[in-house]
Amino acid sequence: MKIFDKYDSLVAMEGKYPDPRVFPCLGPDSFPPSGEPPRRIGAPGRSPLGDDQEPGHESGTQTLVRPDSKTATPKFFKVVIHNDDFTPRDFVVHVLQRFFRKDETTAMQLMLQVHHRGLGVAGVFTHEIAETKAYQVNEYSKQNRYPLRTTVERDD
Image 1: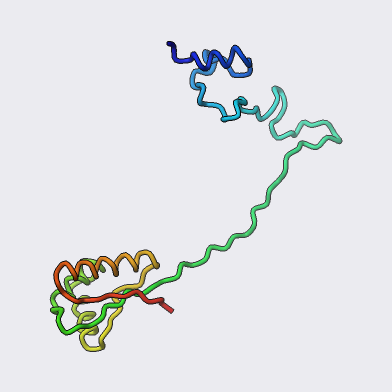
Image 2 (image 1 turned 45 degrees about the vertical axis):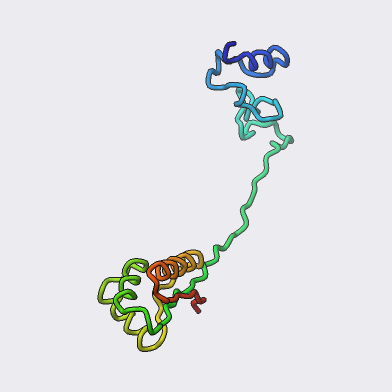
């Protein structure tokens, strides 16, 4: 069985597919599912844009105008760390460095803020990222048997 058996039978039956010797890159799967060959854009000797049309004939082309689309700015959410009496300070600093990429000084200041005020904002992200980070921190805390809790709140 040669490669173009199916293709050759279609050519013999309908006669509207190009010769594979002339177009070797076109196989039987190169055409639309309807079985029609690709349409030509312009006739030989004529501009595909219809510039050389006879007066009084329309080219049949339309100019589409794209409507002005306004991209909405994404809504941001805060990842809030809650204080508890059992999680060591060092673990909170470690979590801030690991999941929120804080340097040691910033992580220490944020940990003290959480300790004294009861909460602290670890970061502001888009909704999906904030949810993911909160989930990761909560799971990591459970794995290490600490009750550290993070939540996601809308940033105003």
